Structure formats: C-alpha cells, structure tokens
View 1 (cartoon, rainbow, N blue to C red):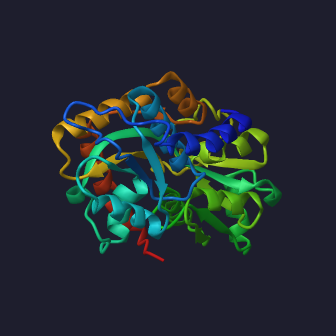
View 2 (spheres, one colour):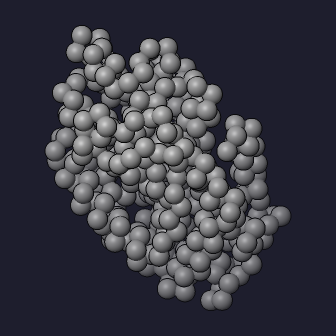
View 3 (tube, rainbow, N blue to C red):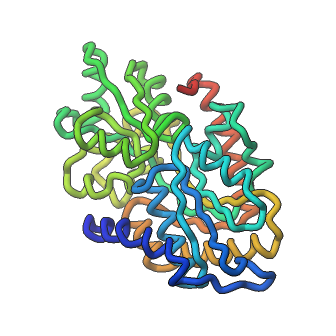
Length: 330
C-alpha cells in the first residue's frame, strides 16, 4: 500500500464508518443488528495505528457488504485494558465488538493478573484477522545496520532504549526476550499505542523500535528506518534483505504477532454466526487481502472455535515467556 493510499484510507474511513444517518443497517434474520442501533467496534489503542487501520478496513467492508453501521471507537490506555473492559461489560447482544491483539488477549493476563475481566470467561471469539511478525528497527541516524552493531554499542557502555506500543505488547515482550538472550541492558520505553511510539521513533526521540512491518511500512519503503531483524523462521519475501533473529544465533526467537475480533460472552448463536460471516467475508475481500500481504500480514479469517483454541494456546505459551523474562507492569 503506497503512502498516499494509506493516508487516504486513514482520512476517509472514519467518516465512512461513522455515518449512521447515511448508511442505515439492514437487519439480518433474528433482528440483528437492531434497527437504529449501530455496532460499536472498540479499538483499545489510539487512532492511526495498525490495529485501528485494520478495524476500519473491516468495518468499511461490513458497511458495503451487509449495510451495517459500524462505528470504530478508539478507547486507548492501560495496555488495552480500558477498551477491553468496555467490551467485557457490554450487553451481550453483538452490538459491541473488540479488536483484540496478542498483547491484550494472550500476554496481559500474565502481566496484569488483576485486570478487571477474564479473557476466556468474558469474551466470545469471532475470528482472527491476520498474523504477522515483529521487526526490530533502528533510526537511520544511529548508524546501526545489524544486531551486531547494537550489541557492540551496548557492551561498550553506550546507553540505549527501545520503544514499544506499550507494556505487555508483543514489541515489549520480544524486546525483553532479546535482551535476556543477548545479555544486554537496554531500557524499555512503553507508549500508549503504535501511533505515538512510531511518531517518537521517527522523530529520533528513541533509537530503537519493535513493531509490525505494517506500522512502519511507508518508512521502510522510504529508507528512513533500518530494519535489523525479524521474528519469522525464514526471511519474509516482502523484506528479503532483512535477516531473522534465528540467523543471528537466537534460534528460539520465532514469534508471530496477531489480532482478531471478539465480542461480549453470551451473544446468541445466530448473532455470532452473522458477525463471523460478515467479518470473514470482509477479510477475504481482494482489496483487504492485498493490503495485508503488501505489508507482511497473512489473512486468517478462521472460525470462532478455531480462534478460541488459538487464543488459549497462545495464552499458555506467553505465560511461560512472561515467567522466564520476569516482565512486570509499569
């Protein structure tokens, strides 16, 4: 996706998605969605980030395909817990959705055990949107061109910091795993979402950043950032010149990142089926698939049952990682 096209999408989708007076919902069998009641799609991160963009893409396709009014509601803060709690406490009628991520659904329960909801008890999975990788980037002014450059600098006593979209995000966890494996002291700087983390990184406020390629794609294409390593098992075809952590000797640093939609536990089966049908259709639209693939994402669009099992497996795996790295909130 070009810079111009991405900006146009971000500028136009909010207006298109949030226009109930123009785009009224067509009720499905069983009375869903309810007349004059829009579907609220909560994104627990600031506007402008990858999760926000993907939610708006799907919301717009659901408007076009089903005639549903879907309002994207950015409720950022507390590592995704503010927006997540709003969905967990909503009426279970399918009119409140949540864009969940690997961080908010699988990692947070181990870092924030006192969070005011339980993922498996309070959320009903709908479908996994996509999976991708995490990339470690250096600001081009640092002069770093490889992991070896970073390691030499830190071991020579140079203080370094890395940014992530927040505590408990996949960027945070990969950063802590790398520090542990390499025996490095690098300061973590958490942000309240992708957009502010990328903004400060691009402006040179922090020298390193862990993010998904799609979050920085325009900067990768422009050469304003330097990708050092990715968490895939093999090199990504869209980034053939970027080595994997595995190539640099970190054999177990192979991690996917992912996101998907859930709703409040207890929605009627017919409503869940409608939500899944329209979301899967939206995700499989050629334009949506293309925009994902261009930016190192793979569309999944699995069933609610498959997504539920996947979340459970990922929660178990990341519990082990959190215990190993001793990551704490704050």
